Length: 469
Ligand SMILES: Cc1cc2nc3c(=O)[nH]c(=O)nc-3n(C[C@H](O)[C@H](O)[C@H](O)COP(=O)(O)OP(=O)(O)OC[C@H]3O[C@@H](n4cnc5c(N)ncnc54)[C@H](O)[C@@H]3O)c2cc1C
Image (cartoon, rainbow, N blue to C red; front, top):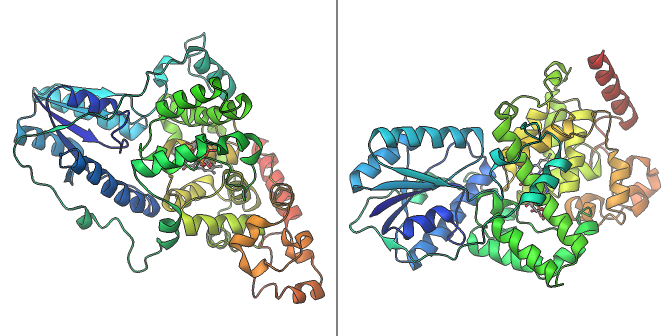
């Protein structure tokens, strides 16, 4: 039997149900079709992830085929060209992914070609978790309690032996897709920090599970601590399976290698990833509309100058600027700082969350349609189980609390390195003498605050009040 296996957000061989099924049924033709709509940092990641995957497939003795074009007609045409007996893929749980899956199924059925899809992306099938009233959950805690009570994901499957399709099939060249940035090439910081691909993912996972996880619960809030898994881009591209993460964490807890509190806290963050996708499946409109429809009428002010200063890391608030510069240089930002920067944009700057979401989409290597959408709506107060709008992060107190010694700030804001800890979180309060001793000229070396914290906070509360009335 000949099986065409369509790869998408599942760039791995280990615990890959569609690939495993294809391989157990005879010859396999693995195909990747150039996706549309990726941001710049994700394109960079995809390029290297595919390079790594090509190597893996090469070692398995099977070439990976690249094609460009409308996915439905490309798959149909290729399946006919090689005489495929069936087409398989792992499902993508997003409105576009689900839509494409349905279109593919219908088009293949019409052409008389059987197809089969698998869950390789989530621990649970979103349609299987419902309240007692048979409605979808809208709040994380009961959702996750219900998941944990009934959660029995299958054990991971070993990487299969692949029998390639007999005969040659033409492929485009990955280089011709121009996924890498040129003029300018801004990817140096990304390359220093990351190893895209399945092997890089497994290495990160082993490092984390081998020890770092035991400091996760408290360490995860400290931006300088490196206490999280850094698996997000690997998960976004499906380079590691969430079922592997789930089972290996539980095993490690059971065997006493990981303590229960830290292990379960980590699993609950994996639960947030599940919840974000779950929401997209049940409420597809939230992709570009507020989950709470009342927020359609929120009086956003959308100043292009404030947005540009935020994007460039030049707001004059060190913790915000450090985060935005970490993002620009590495394609990543620490979770606590993501929350602070998102709150600052939507509340201090009264800028629509979609502008922030779009910037993150373009610059994050872990840009994930579920997590990015849910998290921005959470930060803006309009999402499911969201932080209320009137909860406005104070960027000075947050910085003093979570980066007490200014370690994170000093990595990303070298111009402030010499400021004493007392002032590095709020340089505008330092005297002329202190600034001079630290070689900082405010407004020259580092910006003055673009908004006054107290005024901006009040402005946000007033806007919220006016909107509620
Ligand atoms: C405004 C904003 C935008 C965000 N955009 C994205 C995004 O595009 N892609 C993305 O993967 N995450 C996003 N997050 C969530 C979170 O910041 C990252 O998942 C996390 O920082 C990734 O680092 P890590 O892999 O070391 O996380 P860990 O703490 O090690 O967590 C393990 C995994 O759990 C999941 N996870 C952790 N926290 C969350 C969360 N709050 N919501 C959903 N899933 C979570 C991720 O898949 C992560 O890789 C966003 C958060 C905010 C506040």
